[in-house]
Image (cartoon, rainbow, N blue to C red):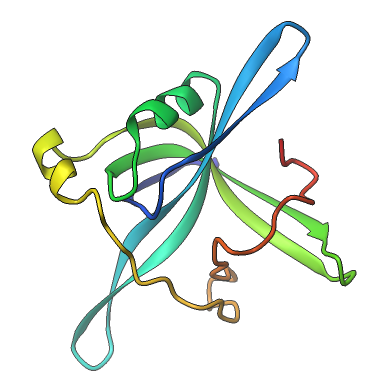
Length: 148
């Protein structure tokens, strides 16, 4: 079973594109969630994982209309992995959540207070023990085979 549920804040406004297939247009919204991760080493420290998400169709339209930087949301979906060759010929591996359901996780008043949320983005690191790597939003993904 491939199922994931995340709660976090948008690091910036969603990036929305529309693909055209015949007479139909499909909204594709991409955004990154900063999801808190707590761990104990030398005390109680908190950091965040930056998880890329993509919502299609009505979900993409909803994200475009209502989601903004700092909005706290809950996302339900599935993990999708892929890879592509970058300009230097190196294989780049990608991981993102394909959104099946998304909703607000705080009141409108609280969301307005957090509209200018600025997460502290971590630099890319080597894979952790779980095999995942943090990849910043600055990575050019225009050459991805599944990029619309």
